[in-house]
Amino acid sequence: MASTIKEFTDNKSSAYGAMYTAAQQAFAQAVDDLGAAQTAYDTLVGEYAGLERDIASTRSAMAEALMPADIELLAGNLRDLMVQQRNKYGELFASEAGRAAVQQRRDLAEQSVTLLSESLNAIAQEQEEADARADHHAQWKQSVTDGDLTTLAAQAEALLDEVGLGGGGGSGADADDKVSIAAAKARVEGDLPADLLTRARERGAQLSASVTVAEETLFEALEDELAAHLAATEGAAALSEQRWQAFERAEALFRDVVLLSDSRYQQAVSLLQGVENSAAPTVPSRVVSLSLR
Image (cartoon, rainbow, N blue to C red; front, side):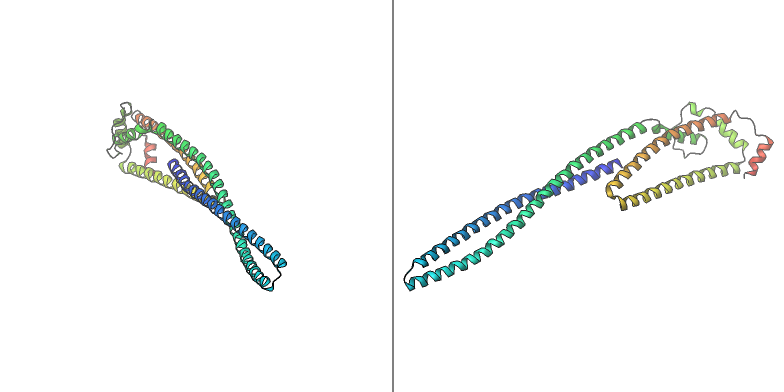
């Protein structure tokens, strides 16, 4: 789980980093486009002002002209200038609208860069937390597995081999654990009927398996129900946090299992060593044993 969260935050950082780079490029392009649009607009403004000056000059010349031919020529020039002015005004209006659109695109790109920068800062903090969690889990795992757990399984398997219940894969129990085990096995097999002993072993195995399945099924059902509820109400962030809390609970549970397993192993060794010195079964106890078949 810790490695999964770290991988998720790393992938998230890469994705947002790519989006941030794209946003920066879009912003730079928008700035260039806005500069070009402003230059074009300024050029049109200058040209429009020049046409206004030409129109004013032509009107002044018409007022001073005396010859009809000169007046007619100036009137034609004035008409052409006014047509150009009208067309230039249309270009100027379109240029102003285009400049406003580019300005808006530039502002949006700047906002995207700002938001993505803030997101990257938040993700960097998430990465630090994920790294810390991964380190914590690695240290926890090492502290647990480097202890009794590494030898407990081999010792338990060896103990089962000694009493005839194992698969023969044990590497040998401790010398103290082997004390009286053979004698205890002989007492158990000699005092209890074979079919009753077999049935007891089978019932124990079935009960252990059923309890394990029930625990796993219940835990998975609760986790799925909670995950579905959080995903529907609070989103992925809350779901991720909830799963991390579940993971921490699993760590604590596993730690308890390690301690409990060692305790049960020592208890089993103690019980086996006490069988040899136990009193012989009485008639009532044999009757009770037979009634359990």
